[in-house]
Image (cartoon, rainbow, N blue to C red):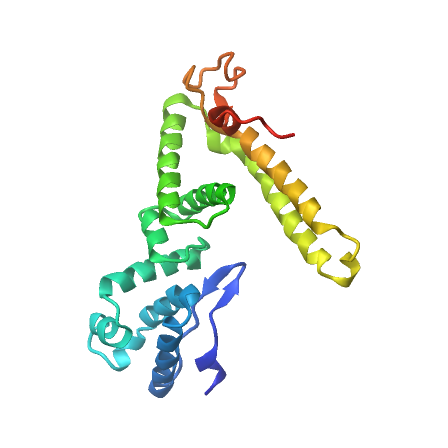
Length: 245
């Protein structure tokens, strides 16, 4: 089988790229055979494989309609496949959804809004030591709606105020990953990675609990003694936790 027929999905800066269609009908049929097999074996890449079939119209080689292809060749309903395709399009755009339930929670948002909601949900998931779920995304989306409304009504832009804090957290996360990589090399043999990683995590958590979180409920963003005249309060105040430092 040619390289084109067995090629996997490629990525550019963590964004999935669907390969172009093969040149001949025989190659298309071979590619479909390969993809259908992978779709039922590889849950992680299923979304992009389904998008490739739909986008390149592979189903036309053997079936009169996409719905028939979905039902008879894949064993899926057309509705489920379309949900997977919508999820795959988000993956293509750089939103790392893994299943159609996650994409459903982001439906109707543009790419930047979806990324913002995903980042917020991912933050909640990391705090709980869990993976991002459709429920977390829905909650994060609801929070975004409330924040956007607060910005419009009161002029306190929590998102913009949080950006410098978020940037530091991202740098700490990148530093932790790089430190882990170095510790697994010959030159990193003297690095005691685990305690260092814990310290970096604690610093990042302290920043996340100290950054702007919500409009101050005491003054509606106008500034008061409770919020130190900032118009907002951090998560540490909302949850009653002591800010780490």
